[in-house]
Image (tube, rainbow, N blue to C red; front, side, top):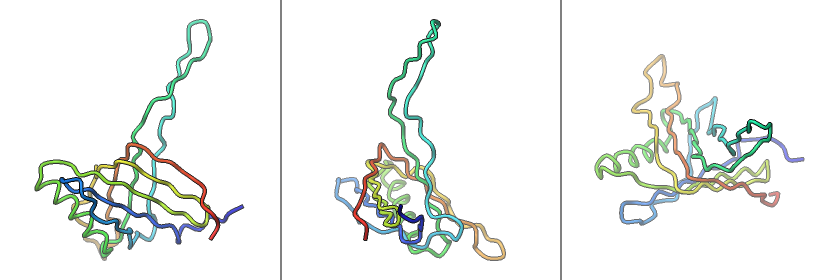
Length: 150
């Protein structure tokens, strides 16, 4: 059974510019001390119970949000800011693809066609800039697959 260490996990993102040219990929660095990245539950099927007590279900596609939490001094903050600023300048969204490699779980997760959907404009100024700078990418789909043990 694999272990559950997350420190060696790597999130890599490649953004396509407005001409469709891939910018990157870049590996996200400088995660917050309480969280790295997290997904939300997605609804995998819609079910309905008929009046006769028979259950029916159907697959329904669902977007896959991925929230990334960074330290205020993370070098990756500048990359997310550049992505957001490019969208503002273009007046359009840019798409991305991503991969999470989790060697301890012997898994790789591939994310397809993502949009930058949430941005923290700046870190909170407290005693230190300690609160996370959060970004969210919403993906069209993902696939998890086993990878060989390292």
